[in-house]
Structure formats: structure tokens, C-alpha cells
Length: 236
Length: 360
Image (tube, rainbow over all chains, first blue to last red; front, top):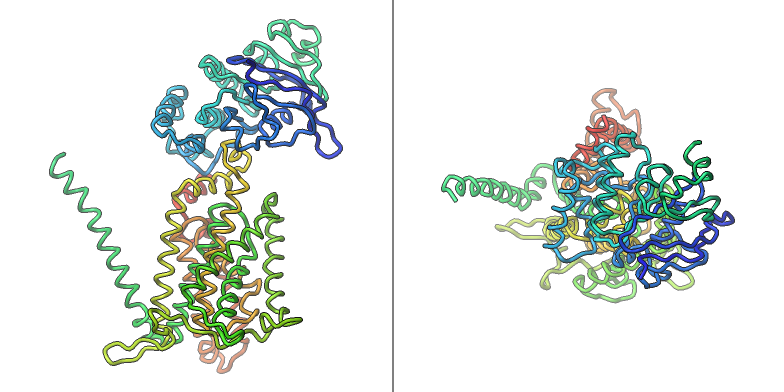
């Protein structure tokens, strides 16, 4: 069974149709990239999947279960976690408190503690700064907090919105390395990215969005060689 | 475990306990000392300080914990006060016990809180402030005009002759007689308000450290991220409004019984602003800070009232400026100075302080 199946999803802001009927899927354990230019509708798609925006039409299924009527805060319990654009960390809480907030919906305290250790193992930097206010961290560290916090919800599907945004190239590579680590641990990932090069190198499959529609899809390796992609997104 | 270590871990709580004991003693004798120095009027001011602490802590839940700017908070105080006045006075000739009215007042204020919260769920910041301001005014105008077609609130004249609060059949308006000396009602009410205030403080501390408290903080910090963490932002916000309002409802009922008279004049926008000032000035979201803010803002205007006129007379030989106006000018100046030099409030939480230092 597919992890996520999206069928003819449309999102609009009043008269503006941001997403005009997109269909795609993510298989269990797969890393899928959704690339495209600014304003192509990538983030709107992702926010709609997370339940933060209402869908105008279309159907979203997570592991065969329809999410159409599930409110945003309950989608977490269904195994879907969003790392919002611009990270959305709780800047006045400490790193530890941020991570604990990820476990807000969970009652299995001992398991949560174990996973906290795992997150700290994945991001040793956060262990060093666990009692520091998250707002005082660097951009890269804040992104680690956001990803770690999402992992604390114990997701089966992670929605990542522009993790490279506003980060220095060196940090972008670091963040992408951790995304790869998360993917290896078996969590399916839907990655929305403007940095097409890196996203295509990292992912197995990818969809290209343009003006609210998916115009290309396929193997990431193949798309990297595709003339249209190279011209439009890789600056050739 | 070694002996020295256990001795060390015991000595600290001993100090803390001694501190608590001293504080308890101070709170117990406070009205007698204040009454001795300043007379009964100052004991009344002390009583009002306790009421304002309850109000400020209630508003602190909405503004400080959940980060929702509410400029109509006094409406809940009004709801509690009028409920008490209607159910325990000659107005309708109902004389229900205060111990039944106060919980009902809390529930009714809760309900009004949710009524204000429900339509404003999507609003934030300035927009929310404007709607809540309107709500506060609507409630006051209702109180002012509901003497027709059927006389519910007695309009601008207000309701007088409200029953005092009785404890075990003893009307607190009779005051206390201690060692053959009689002390007026303000002394008796002081202890009632003190107990209620301590209860409110206790509930606030528990709330702050609860799951709900963490959800409020998350919403204050980033609503979208809070939702992404699985927090039902709608319910959690409604709970902030409702719980905050309930404190206002209880304080209103106590006010009604204490004063024996309520009128719409006591529930103007200025009162809402005053309570908000207490929260902001003291240190938003920090319980001890909010308490300090409430005490200072209740007492400072009264001190200015007592000081200004004699000062003018001794300086100029006569009263040059209307003391009432000058008092508010000085009060405003004090607020501006505090915000300039202590932007996080007089006694902010450790967290807020760190954050401001990092910004600098």
C-alpha cells in the first residue's frame, strides 16, 4: 500500500488557484522531491496535505485512509508530520522543550524518552544546546530543532518545506545529509525544495511543479539529465 | 548517599520554608499594620489590591500564557459582579448564598469567555484587541441600558443594598472583634480575598506547568507549528478565554459582596486597560511579576492621591493643578519610564530576560 496518495488536489486563495489538480504518491520509505520555482504551488500543496489549508477539491489518502475530513492537529496522530516553511520553531522555549512539544500527543513516556536520545544522537549539536533558547540558535541548528521536533511525533511520513531556505551552502549540505539519515531510518519523506540540484541528488523520484500543475515526473536521476529540467531549474 | 550531601539538600528547603512562614505571617498581620499606619481606607485599598491580583492573574492566562491580546477583560468582572448583585439583593428580592453564586459566576464568566473566544479564533494581535474592546463595551452598555423594557440591571443607577458575603452564617460586613477591639468589614474581607487569591495563584501555577500550559505557550510562539505538533488550537484557545474569564467572574462576585453596590461605571474600558497594564508592567506570563504589577498599580495612584495635594500646598501655598489630573499624568509617566527601562516588565521570567539580553 502506498504511504501517500494524492489525487487531483486543488487549493485556492479566493480567486487565485494556487494548486490546480495535482496527483502524486509517496511509497513507504521513499524520499520524493517536489521541485519548482517560487510560486509554483509547492508550499500550498504541502500545507494542504498537513491540513493547514482547505482543499478545494481532490483526495488525500495516508496509508489507505482518507484524510479529507481529518483536521490538521489530528493528522499528526495519523503519522504525518510537517516541518513548516521558515522552520516555525518555538523560539522562546529551550531546545529540549521544543523537542518535547513534538511528543505533545503521545502518552508513552518511556518510549518518548528513548526517542529523545535518538534525536540527540542524530543531532549531537542539539544535545550540547538542549537548555538554550531555540531562538538564539543559528539557522542550521534551528532547522535541526524543527526536524528533530517533527521526528518526536513519530511520523511515518515527514513533510519537509524548504529546509534549505536562508541557509549558507555549507549548512544546506549538512541539513540534506541529516535528511538522508532520516530517510535511511525508514521514514517516508516528501521534500519540497527550490534547490533542484540537491533535491534531485537526494531523492529517488521527483515531481516538477509549474503554475499549480505537475508538468514532469520520474526518476530523480533521469530528471537530472532531462534537458527541460536542466534549462529551467539547474541554470543551463 | 553521603551524610554531607543529604544535610546540604535539607538545609535549602529549610530556608525556603522559613521564607514561606515569614511571608504567611506578613500576609496575616498586613491589614492590622496597614490599618495602624494609614487607617481603614488603606485596608480597603489592600482589599482591592487582592481583587486586582485575581483579575490580573486571570488576564495573564489569556495575554501572558496564550498570547491573545484581550482589551475587554473587565466584562467578565462585570458579569460576576452583576450576577451576584441580581441574586443577592433587594432588587429581585433573591438572597442566594455567596457560596452558591460564586461558582455559578465563575461558570457564567467561563461561558461568556467562550462566547468571546469562538468568533475571534482566527484573529490575532491588533484585530483581536479591537474585537475584545468592543465586547467589553457591549457588556457595559447592556448593563447601562437593561432597565427597559424590563428592569434587569437598574441601568446607570446600578444596584445597591447587595448582601454581604457570609462565612458560616457570619456576615463579613460586621467586621472582626479581636481582643475586645473592633475592626471594620475591610479587615474581614481581607482574609476572604486572601484565601481566594491564594487559590487563584495555586491554580495558575498548576496550569502553567500542565500540558495545557505548554499548549498555550506553543500557540503564543507559533500557531501553525503548534497545530503541526497535534495541538487542537481552537479548543486550547477557547480554554484560555474561558479559564481566564472564570477568575474575573469570581473576583466580580467578591467585589459585589464587598462593595454592596455595583454600577456600570465600575466596568469601563479604563479598567480593562488598567488590568492589562498590571500584566504587562509586572512581567507578562510570569506569575510573581503579575502579582507585583497588580499591587503596584493599585497602590501607586492612591499614594499619589495622598501626596500630591499636600505637596502642592507646601510648594505654592495653594492647589495649582487639579490633583486628580496630575495624579494620572504622573502615573502615565511612571508607566512610560518602566516600559523604557524595563521593557520585559518589572519582574520578568528568567526566560524573557534571557531573550531580551540576546536581542541586545
